[in-house]
Amino acid sequence: MFSFAFITDPQIGLNSPNGLHAADSDRGRMDRAVDFINGAGIDLVFFGGDHIDVIDSEEQRDLFLAGAARLNVPWYGVPGNHDQHPVSLEHEATPKGFLLNHKGSFFIGVNACALRGDLGPEPQAAEWGNLRAAIGAVPAEATHRFVIMHWPLFILHPDEEDSVYNMGMSTRHELAQFFRESGITCVFSGHRHQDIDIVWQGVRLIMSIGTSAWHHYPEEASFKLVTVFDGGFSVRRVSAEAPPADQHE
Ligand SMILES: [Fe+2]
Image (cartoon, rainbow, N blue to C red):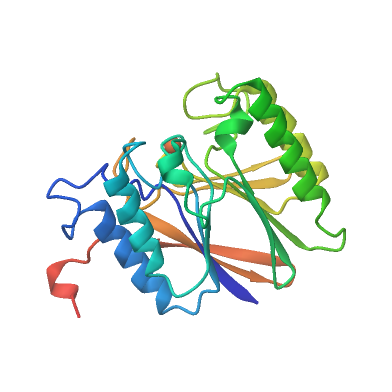
């Protein structure tokens, strides 16, 4: 048994009305998430993309990396649509994709921007190749296969129209079939800034609002804490908001 954290859309700079270093900033919420994780016996952390808001901001990039560097456990990340510029990807700890085995559970990180076709047909085909190779390398006896990707397959139902929030119709169906056939345990996504939990074709699809801001209706900025055990896993939400003044320790 072990636990990992999934933090998506820290999006440093999006929701910092009193400056990038204020307590109510994106970095402030990320710091609270990191503080919790450092004291919670968590083995590793995954960032789900949109680590910064302005795609070529070195200041935001450095703030994110400095915040992640406060973690006392290993961390990995996948790019979101705000992370495509090389300035956001040059750090070795934010690869475009990854495959790792932690205590017999496998984690596959995907560049969903490429998979979605946003970077053109060749990167899309290449990312499909990366995804198939990564999942193909997972031993058949593995019991947990987690996919980390910024974009969700869809938001509410699999027949919804293509939008900036979902995967295109053909890609989402192709992915769902591939994930089902590959025995994927759960796909963790962000991008939409909403907590949404879906099961489609037997595959669990979990979106997290992330630590920056809600977009669609008021929700608490938060991240996910996942505990993996024999035969299953549990997911709960941890707030990244500042507690009310009278609850400060
Ligand atoms: Fe996004």
